[in-house]
Length: 262
Image (cartoon, rainbow, N blue to C red; front, side, top):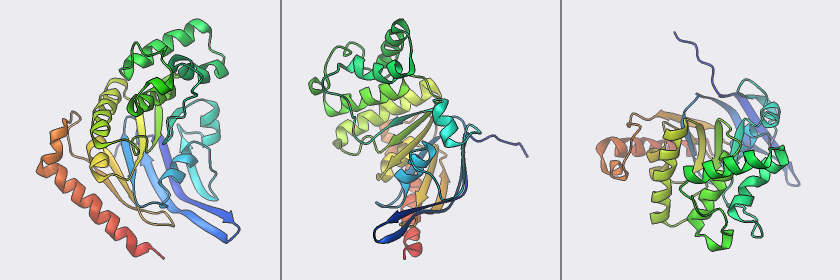
């Protein structure tokens, strides 16, 4: 058997939040390996711990039991090594900064030279098809373009891992389909490992090499589905029997998760 070295590995992961109404278990006994170059989608009902798990990987939350490693390090060490970029649900761009200066912000904090900042901004704007929009302000761009700018900011320091917390959830279906296509093209060009939170079954199936289905709180993994779909995926692949079969398995996994619901 070939040994692998997962980029992200969770073992017996628990996370309990202490609240005024008592302890709330957000994650319970989560075990998962994510390999280099995987595109992994997390799907489940609201409150199942999808975003919480992403935040644990990013050292924004700390588990109360079990372990998580990122590139063989603790999440805190990985954060200090700038091992990942994080894309939030909202673009979070500063309206008084141009798109280029929004993208430069983490690079300024990290101490990159002005020339290096300019080179990286130019490169990532091309990656997300926003070449020529660097001097625009966020309010001059559509919602989809703002999200692409947010992705560019996360790519600017060239981390191998991209964590994405439902970045397209607030967009209409036409824009969302377009950004799904662009994200797949970006993933293919860069070879990055992507962890992607979504509530959409078609989006999870279309984007992913691996789909992680989670149960209602306390969040558990009820199924991990390895996608047999080819890496190149036109949108009309969603009408194929293979696609519909995977979508059906995801739906069944979501239903099965309710058996755990207290």
